[in-house]
Length: 284
Ligand code: PLP
Image (cartoon, rainbow, N blue to C red; front, top):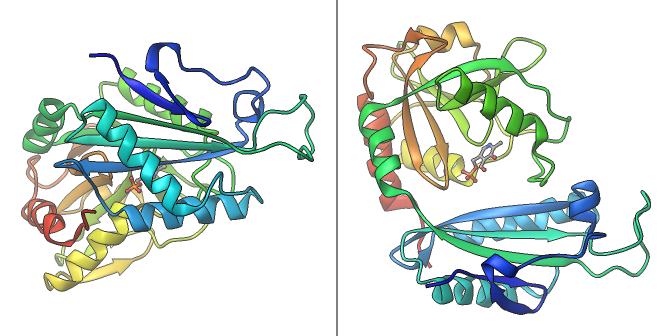
């Protein structure tokens, strides 16, 4: 069965899908994206993802490619055509096709690409059961990490360095010595008093949808939450650590820069929160 992609008004075979060479996404990374988890054929926290998409577009003075109901229909149709039950749907909007020139083009229409793929459930299950290692490195990204821009070069370089170091994820550290987030995940610890600690929203991090739902879940579970930055040193001596993202929700972190976190196995608060997410994430 061949995969299908939605590209600017057409459903096409994934293998042959393409955009024009002067699409500003291709030329300048002038675009934004969203990744929404899919469980049992339903979209997870779709409303929050679409709100964030609109916000990212607004911050870059870009237009929505179409009204929201039409976009929602395309997300579902792409899932349906790809027979994805558990996985994710990816949606990218760029400023459109125009002769290559830095200023915003006057008449370009935004480009929209939507793809869907299945989750590698085995890989995620292994990571959740055993926990993963992260390595810290300087955060080399721009100052507007709250915008879900397709310009991901520093994230890619960080992830690659992590993988070459035998780790699953990179934890990025700002100039003041605090962890911002992972290269494609938000970063969390559980401190010595059992409090959940994660960096507050702001231009320093992407405001993860999973992060938001987890904060809600934690509070309703009676877990104390503190939104403040933490250092790699503090994380290494924390009771627990984990990363969050729509793709895998929560993955326990058991080692940071080779140093064991707690007893180097997935922590109880981490696993409890992972379980609680199921009751808070909204399926539609
Ligand atoms: N931080 C970064 C840099 C990301 O790229 C992502 C997801 O792609 C996240 C955090 C997690 O965000 P979400 O929970 O919305 O998937």
